[in-house]
Length: 106
Length: 257
Image (cartoon, each protein chain N blue to C red):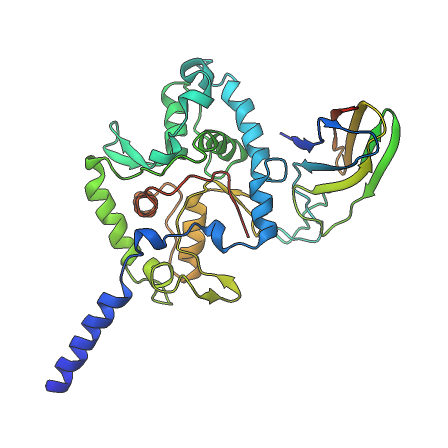
């Protein structure tokens, strides 16, 4: 059950600086912890986050251990034209999630 | 002899001063003790990680389960109207068992009796998600738990447990949460212990958790043996702390440090 929460302003004026906020559900297991039996808990983290606007990449982040569970990533961009933001999270053990949000620029 | 009676009187006075309950006007939610950044996290739905569970819970609400192949929504319809204010009344009296049950137990009793499905384990993602989704519908509603007269004996037991000193540190809930709530313990604020936002996201847990989990953590903290999940004592304690917060607005899913 992975789910994402995205906050992109629905409307903006051309040239406005807008904040984009994303929250992804993930345990972010560091790979440094041990189970009661002494075995290492395998690392399970999101390794990469990308945001594309109308197909071209506008933001990317590489993630590492020691990032909290359910990572909250926020960044700014300039509103240039109406279109769709596409978000993608890729991680260990085949983790892959996408989400999208549209903006109308006047 | 006179000396002994002076001590006895001093103890009585001290007892009446320290075991005092918090006046209505001075009650504060744990939210008030938080730093601005943590408050901001709770205030905004897209920044509050608890909303991830609410989102999952909304999916589960509509998903058919069990031998009866029924979803919660098949009986209860739209949770936005049917579940409004419900969480503010829990733990509530359960006629079938003749005892108070909390919201998690209510959901599980619905699962076993109506859906004919296996009950969800305490603190499982599914149970927390459903509870968070139901509790979310009461956001802003005033807490009413404990007003049912049938609950009186259980409320009294919960209160006794709250006042009871126990564990290797020999502390009762009241010794921190009534007597010392304006102070700090190892750098963290000691709050008044009003459970306004459960299930809530604790940054320390990196997860959503129930009130029972919080109570168990506190009991372990005073080095006493914690009650098992679902134990009657734990539910009575939940009932008392909820009734103590009567009238305060629900915040679920809250965020706490």
